[in-house]
Length: 200
Image 1 (cartoon, rainbow, N blue to C red):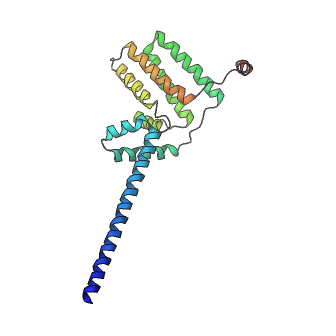
Image 2: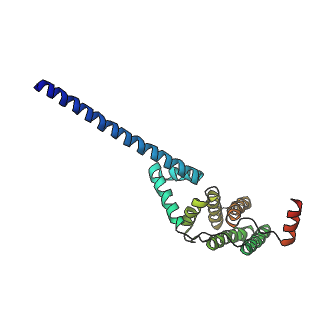
Image 3: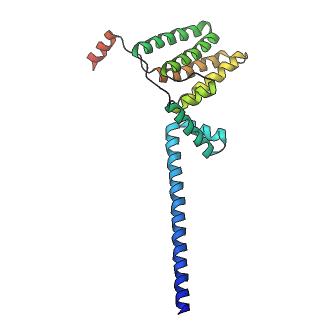
């Protein structure tokens, strides 16, 4: 009888141990699946910025935590679209900066950087140091934030006297891509809008 009880206890121990192992495996699998989904969401949201963050930190988990912190920080901002009048005013300012490039490329690049900063501030982004600005922008504008960084690097090179006119032209192109995304489309003049509607 003792042998039967011991046999049942051994069987019960084996069954309990197997159940514990199955639960542990299920928890590990669920955790891995959750992390993989979270990584996929971050990759989708941040695009090329995700790869840049992973490369910069050298650790996927650390990079993902930083990207989540960025998203949380930006979620606390009051980001708003520009009213039509402001959009048109900024586009007029950009046209002047672009025209200035022909005669004075260095000043035009400085002015382009200032104008992008003004637009960011008008949209509700805090205008702090460059690294924080670019990190904040990466949340909502991950496709063009690298252009902003490239333009900034060229502007710094220009301050050191190391940027060619072609470099400055590239900086203007980079600033323009971010400017366009931040400002949106200019409001058509009423006459132009009526003509567009009549064509449709």
